[in-house]
Image (cartoon, rainbow, N blue to C red; front, side):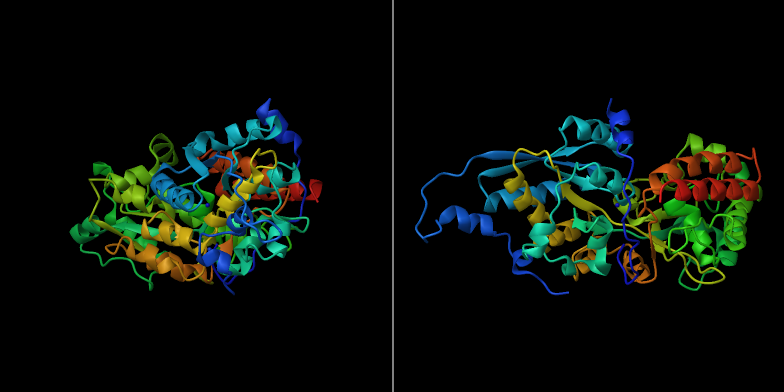
Amino acid sequence: MLFRKKAWISTTSVAVVAALALAGCGGSKSTNDNTASTSANSQAATTSAGQASDKPKEAVTLTYTIWDQLQQPAMEAIAKEFTAQNPNIKVKVDVIPWGDYWTKMSAAAPAGTLPDVFWMHSGQFVKYASGNFLAPITDKVKAGEIDLNNYEANLGSIYTLGGQNYAIPKDFDTIGLAYNKDLFDKAGIPYPDGTWDYTKLAQAAKQLSQPDKGIYGFAAKMDTQTGYWNDMLANGGFIVSADGSKSGYDDPASIEALKARYQMILDKSSPTHQQMTDTDSTEMFKSGKVAMIFEGDWRTTDIDGSDIIKGKWNWAPLPKGKVKRGNIINGLGNVMSASGKHKAEAWQFLKFLGSKRAAEITAQMGAAIPAFKDTQAAWVKSKPQLNLQVFIDQAADAMPYPAGSKAYPVWFPKEGEIMAQAWGGKISIEEGAKQVAAMMNQAIANNK
């Protein structure tokens, strides 16, 4: 699980496909996007001579696999509308939780049993594309069957490898500051807004904290996309250089930002790393034990489903740093299996998933911020009691999730292992950052 005016990091590298085998052992609008009818219907209805064909269409059932149960109703609604217009093609929506999703996909890929159509994440894309497990859609793009200019901020470029297109953008996400209005009211502190900077965040977190009662002002969690990557960018640091050749973890501005986040734990303005390991920090927010947390828009429905906090919380923009307001943007793509038995039908469904109509359903049901241009307003209105507009507004200046290289799958898992030692107090934050930088630089050098 982008959206913005920033250029995406191009995915041009080739990943180590052996890893899969081991694991297994947000322009112009195409008319195809404005309606659910497709050229496949007209081809089935007429012969090349223009005469009607009475050959019945084969009944086919496609499998569409996703990882978010909260989005299942919207995905099923999209599938139902597609089948209504393509009666011979039924779609079964399967949900595999994120924790198991990639384990099962990495086993299915070399076995040739991937779903017909499924969700793809930018952090996993290179492995699957370079392994020839995804069906390219380049010829469909060139033929004008799908127009990638219909999607926000050139999102289609995320899922490109070696000049081939592999995915149709589904949605995009940015990061917001969730806050508990009830705790703010009791402390007599004005709610966060666009004027807040990191100094104000730290001050308010101290005022809101009551460690003796198990209540903390902020969850200074050890996390990348929904955590310190945003801090590093805001403070003038960076994650990976623009050309992808160097880690930014050992940049002084990055280290300063990491230290500032960790200081909130030392100040008891935040739960400890162990507390947030034992209980997910967002669950702590949902239960009223944390007043503020950085989180992605995709957790909106989940958070609002808590009876404890429902009606007592809202979203604000992330605070401004010394240099800017940092924010990580990412987006999912829909892809089809290279080994699927029903590629023609899978393509028709994939194309419908990328249509304006599918985006409208996604937005109206509040499932995610759709990637299709000019369809986000319905998503913002899906929960009028919440300030969802902050996620759209922040997209313009957000930086893309830094997964566009074959080095990413190598360094990302190790990053978490090293930073866990720092957040757990076994090594200093500065030492942890420098170790991550050295490890990343080696991974980049080994995977050019």
